[in-house]
Length: 62
Image 1: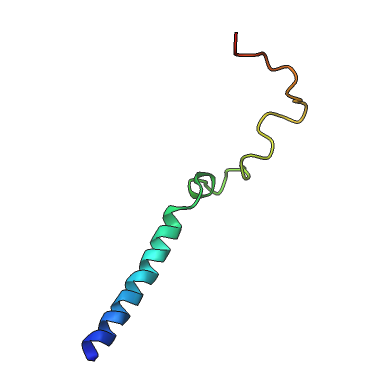
Image 2 (image 1 turned 90 degrees about the vertical axis):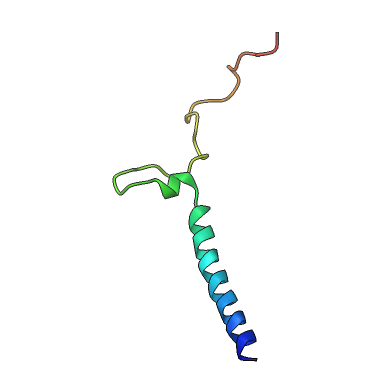
C-alpha cells in the first residue's frame, strides 16, 4: 500500500513539473524572446499599414 501511494505521489509531482515545462516551451516567440526595451505588441493587428486597402496587389497568376 505504501508503494502504491508513493508511486501516485511521484507521478503527480512529475505531472506538475512537466506541465510547467511544457507551458514555458509553448509561449509565443514575440513573448518569449522579447527584452525590456522592445516595443513590439502582439503581431497580427497591423502588419501592412493603416492606409493599405489590398486593391493595389498585382495578380501573380499569369
